[in-house]
Image 1 (cartoon, rainbow, N blue to C red):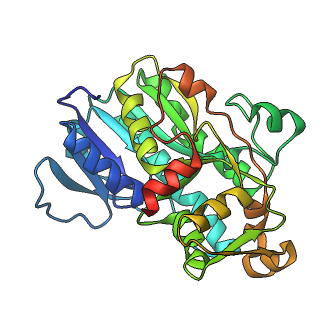
Image 2: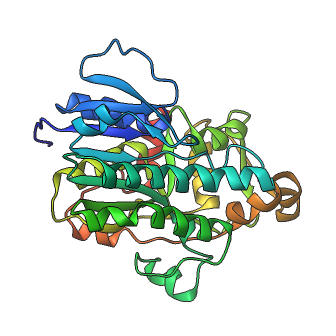
Length: 311
């Protein structure tokens, strides 16, 4: 149960899948919400407004910044939206680093009342599973993987690290695969399921660290409202799942009869290129730290999450 707050939250990436759900939740719980957008529009909803920023030009609406008590920084190009060309990889990196740099610069150069800064990161920080991670899960103190996503996440987190030295409580959430009704990863898994196919990727043994979008939104608000929460936390459900189990769970909750099929690794590499490395990578990530901080998941198990989202 959330307590009502007079906080004003400034959201970047607020027009995205998670940002929209988060704004709706905040408003329902008594927050004023300002969404930063390159093309701000007039809002017809109470307690919701839009303000302009332009990452490439280094511009941000300072009036919006002055009003905010909290910043939730979600901005960034979708990692899985397009095939990874050299240009696309640079856009993914720049959208994260440049936006973080812009916020830090604005906070350091202007008067404001921001007390809390929630920064998105991703479990791409971690590499392929090791014997230790398979047993206990990757934890927040583990070093970043020396890969494109590992390096991107490291630079992403570095772009907002200076916030902590300004006396602002910084919480960085390394987010797993987010399941949402309106799109994202679940929509891709559902495409073959609609034809009664359960398409298992590679050998299907790779571990997927996931989170229900409702738990992610709840976790962000919990981080805002819990002063003891500070630093880096993995935003994943406590019970990870193999790709095979995930696909079969989706299939059986979509149609009573389905046909398992395997998509071989070599074919994924042809179709997805370098992105196939991440699709086939097993990454078992621990949620223990956020649970130890008192957070309780509504959807700790994949079956109940899938049933909620599909049914």
